[in-house]
Length: 64
Ligand SMILES: [Zn+2]
Image 1: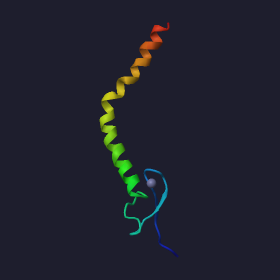
Image 2: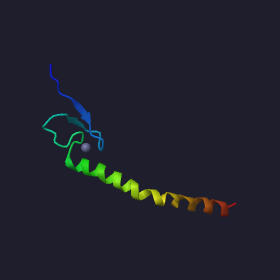
Image 3: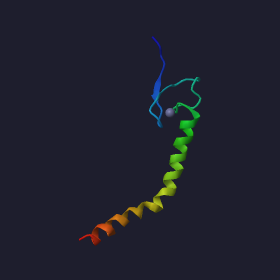
Image 4: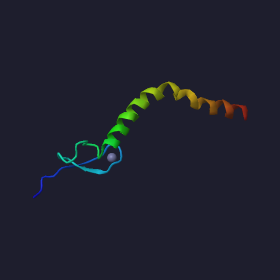
């Protein structure tokens, strides 16, 4: 019986073997690891612009 452990890459959901053969686990690759870190940083910057969607509300009110 094999004791191999498989995890899903948080970025692309690809199966990653949890072993020394996968240095970027739980990510499948360095690229996915960087993407995940990048999204984390981008979300922090994105919060102040959350109110931009209110423009469409003003537009629909003028239509009445
Ligand atoms: Zn991946």
